[in-house]
Amino acid sequence: MVAGILVGAFANPEPLKALIIPLTFLMVYPMMINLQVQKVLSGGDYKVQLLTQLINFAVIPFFAFGMGKLFFADRPLVALGLLLASLLPTSGMTISWTGFAKGNISAAIKMTVVGLLLGSIATPFYAKLLMGAVVEIPLASVFKQIVIIVFLPMILGLVTRFILLQS
Image (cartoon, rainbow, N blue to C red; front, side, top):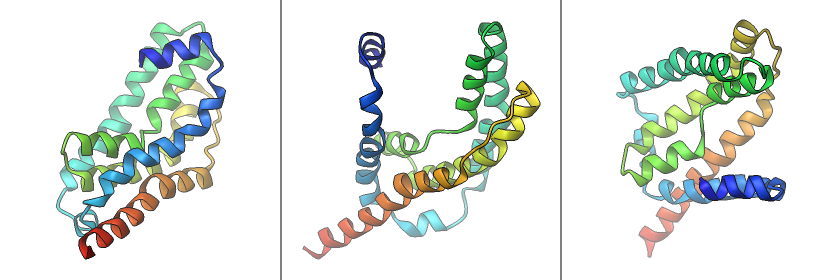
C-alpha cells in the first residue's frame, strides 16, 4: 500500500489502470482450481450470506456517510466518492484473500456476486437518499466485471483441474 501511495504521489498512475483486471484475474484463478462447484451451487450458508449483505448495505454505507460528513464536510464530492466506494463491495479481492486465508471460497464467491448485484441496484438509491446525488450505475459493466473476475476464472479453474486430474 505504501508503494501505491508513493507511485500515486510522484508519478502518473494512469497507465497502471490497465493492469487491474488482468492482475485481479491472476489472483482469483488459482483459487478456482480446487473449487468444488457443487458447494457454490448448494445452499446451507444462508446465515453467512445474509449477515454479509446486512453488513455491506445496512452498516458500511452509513458508516462511510458519517465519515464523509465528519472528515470531508467541505468536500462533498470526496464524501460522495467514499459513499460510492462503500456501496460497491470488492470483487476478486474477496475471493483471493479468502483463498489465501484458507477460508470458504464457495461462500466468498456467492458473497461477491450477490454483493456486486445488490450494490449496483442499491447505489443510486443510497446516493440520492444520503447525498442528494444522482448516480447512474452501468449494469452492463458490472455484469462484465462479474464474468471476468468470477465466472471466467471459475471455468478456467475447472478446466485446469480436469486436465491436472487426467494427467
